[in-house]
Length: 278
Image 1 (cartoon, helix red, strand yellow):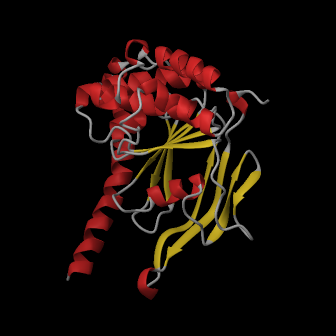
Image 2: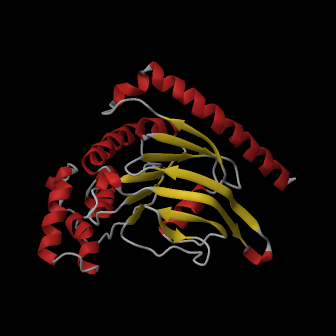
């Protein structure tokens, strides 16, 4: 098996997605191209409703694409002759709203996937689940139910549940959006610790520009709908990164660069909304 650090390269090539609700064509993504290296933390930022989640759903195999192609490690996920990718454990998704089974403990939630997919024996899956939860700082709550732990703990357990499947790519759709600033800061450091252990490729959608720069190797700014790549900003701040990183001059300069690009698109989105209401 290839090691984690040299697998998980995503190629998004000239992807277009047109929805047709009630016979009215709506272009969500238009000729969008990105290259995400294996083991890269790729952050996607742009205005609300611009098509970021549509792109993530296409990678995951939840939505089809109209034109273009998406490849994982050089193999076609979707494209000509195959408009929708097959869903698979090599691409795991964590959404904004929690998806843990409330009637199962954290260990049972994490072990569920490998047991159902029959990739591990039950005893093996539970042992692996307990070990991974302990690595994520959750060793003392493995027998707790989601409703008995904090939102941060539950979200960490969701990420562990995705990682137990040994994915090539972790797809995160604003997983920390509803959290307060302190909890979010703790979650950021936890995610980076997890990344340091696994080197899994991360495709992370966010509206939080500080989050994007703190976590990312690259920040891809996309346009207001239809989604196209506007600008890619490389974040060359050394790892490990800590809370103090955000007060550095380098961080401030990157914030200004990303904010300028996103602000331009936010204005366009606002103006488009005004025209639609007019």
